[in-house]
Image 1 (cartoon, rainbow, N blue to C red):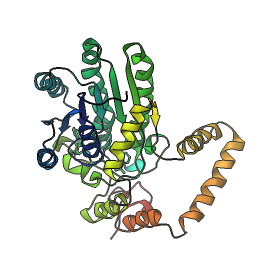
Image 2 (spheres, rainbow, N blue to C red):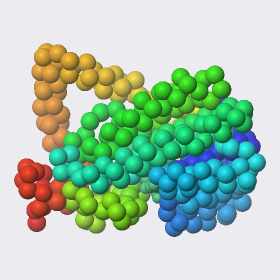
Image 3 (spheres, protein in one colour):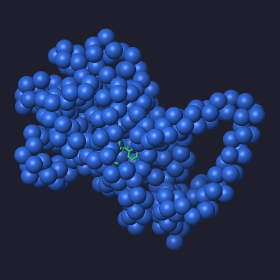
Length: 324
Ligand SMILES: NC(=O)c1ccc[n+]([C@@H]2O[C@H](COP(=O)([O-])OP(=O)(O)OC[C@H]3O[C@@H](n4cnc5c(N)ncnc54)[C@H](O)[C@@H]3O)[C@@H](O)[C@H]2O)c1
């Protein structure tokens, strides 16, 4: 797809961060945009921007884990714009940081529920409608570089994002006959508001094993501020659609990044490979001691307790628990 004019674009998480950047870029390319978000304040802030530009953007308050609400949102799109979306961009997502071994059922239920469950709900809700409309289209889901490799302090997130990559690759094959393209977008650090994610955590899933003080999250936010600008994120997603990429890693060294991740999996399979990985890890730890803006911001954040377990999780190694 290269012509975006007049197309209906439905963007989850469109009220903030990456989704808001995408909504701007697709709206400026002539799309009729729907921004769906669980936070009314995010929708209001985004709509203030779009109203000032006289842009054709429609907000829908939606929790993507709520299937009934998702169906109503899809009906609303058809009522407002006359067709289901031709462009579906599933960007809404959450994260929380802490040692894998401190994770609770609720950490998994919330994060996997939104990051994988929400994407599944989007596919089940919209794919039949898009096929029936017969207009073709393109579906994007936002995964993460974190979905390509393990991270000991984001187990639910990494698992969900990895599953999204496989899910989208599966749909890529399935939707070819219908003229619907599929892209899974795998960015690294972006300048967004994801440090506020726990504000949307449901009341019944509050029990967490992770330490998340406002200071620790603010430290993490400083790291995000070094990340990709949200309008650039929108441009990269559009480029991925234009080029019909199945996996879109928005960096010049995309192939190198992927080869590195695939090599790790190959190395897991043999004793020689495992030894190579051990040596690499040692070299990485030495590199982490060098001054590096991005790395420094993470080390600063971790001094504030970011990505540690709660102090009372007594089975977790002390070095990974927050203590005053
Ligand atoms: N920020 C990064 O560095 C980074 C890196 C890689 C991938 N990502 C991914 O990018 C995506 C966008 O996140 P962001 O960084 O722009 O964060 P963000 O918090 O700025 O935006 C996410 C939006 O999703 C909404 N949302 C959260 N839960 C929802 C739900 N249940 N239903 C509907 N909307 C919901 C939030 O209200 C928010 O407006 C996420 O999938 C995230 O995992 C982010």
